[in-house]
Image 1 (spheres, rainbow, N blue to C red):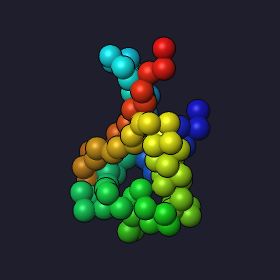
Image 2: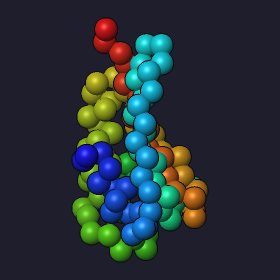
Image 3: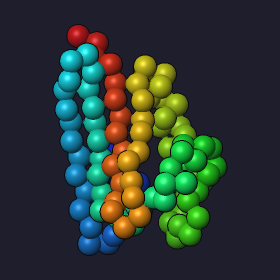
Length: 100
C-alpha cells in the first residue's frame, strides 16, 4: 500500500505500521501510524512545506511527498494532519468529506 511508504521509510526496521479507516458522520478518516522515531513538535508544521526535510533524517527524498499529498487532499475538501512525539512514532490522518 503506497500510503505506508513514509511509515516504512522513516520507521524502525523491526517496527509496526497500523492503517485504520473510520467512518464518522459526514466524513471518512484514514490514518497511518508507525512506531518510528517521531517528529519534533517544532518541525511538525514544516513537514508539509515543499522541499522541507526533518533535520537529521538519513532517508533519501526530495521533501515533496507530504506537500503534494496535503495539496491533493485539500483539493478534495479534506485535511492531512500529523500527531507525533519524539520516540513515540507518528500518526498521519487524512480526513475527507463523505459524498454519499
